[in-house]
Image (cartoon, rainbow, N blue to C red):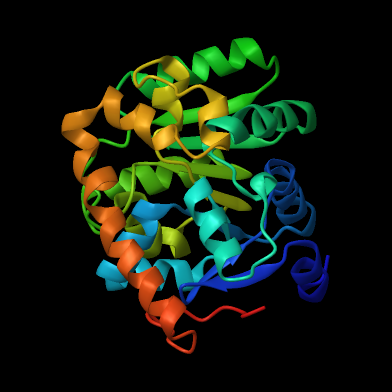
Length: 270
């Protein structure tokens, strides 16, 4: 698939000056297949309200999203926001990794894709990998805890990179939470040889039950955040009760002055 064909198949837009793509769950799986078929590397990031807040707050996040090949929407609030600005988005363009994981694991087991998952506390990733191997016979997956010294030149970080290189995964899933996972990729991406890279947050923690999984219908009506807030109020109160007001302020300024584009991240405007 050429770059022109990719643009047509996976439309890219500007939302609050940030590049985003209209990508369904199946599109996210197909992107991995395309990257593997073409022997290319696609960096596939995601935005939610927390991600928008961090991207406006941290220049390293802006740099990472400028480098990402695709950015999907992880939150109905962003779909509604896009519709407010006239973007042709719908519920199918909102995908979380809780919903995406079964589809990618099933395809990986079927087609022999190797997966490396980096993230979660010690023991959680291993438990999740064993659950996935039982659920998807033939799945090739290796995991490593995200609790290590991620400083670029540290011995622990170099060991992580060496483990990934030795395994030669088709797909790298980085689940260390925003903004750590994005900044780690920004600093280490050139030392990683893989076809598809996804930032997947607490994917394994939800799979293993370490974090309660919201009912899937709540995400479709835009209230998954409330379930998460009630489940982990001490950790998430600021994310869901304070940060959105900053994002809504950005929305208001953009609505009043559509020519305003800040921060600059590159990417196509459609």
